[in-house]
Image 1 (cartoon, rainbow, N blue to C red):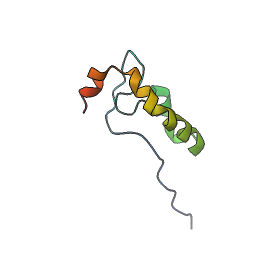
Image 2 (cartoon, one colour):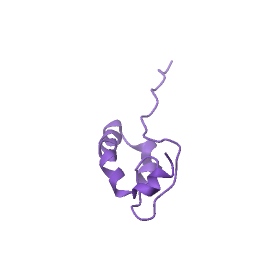
Image 3 (cartoon, rainbow, N blue to C red):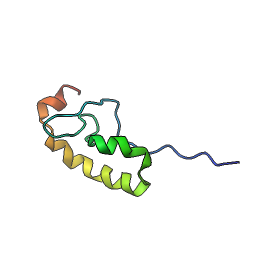
Image 4 (spheres, rainbow, N blue to C red):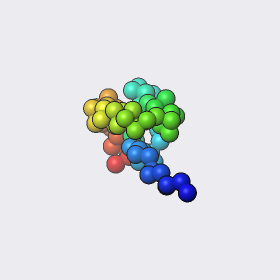
Length: 69
């Protein structure tokens, strides 16, 4: 019998809106290509992207982020 695979780590917070200025998702700060390919990336590739997300948040204007809490 196959072992159950652990869920894929994701920064998704179910606020899916691409900011036209930065090209980042307002909810998770990933790019659209990153979101689209997330399930095909390796754990290491996902971890590398996730490590950059806090810095990316500053590329989205604060008033846009404030609309979603």
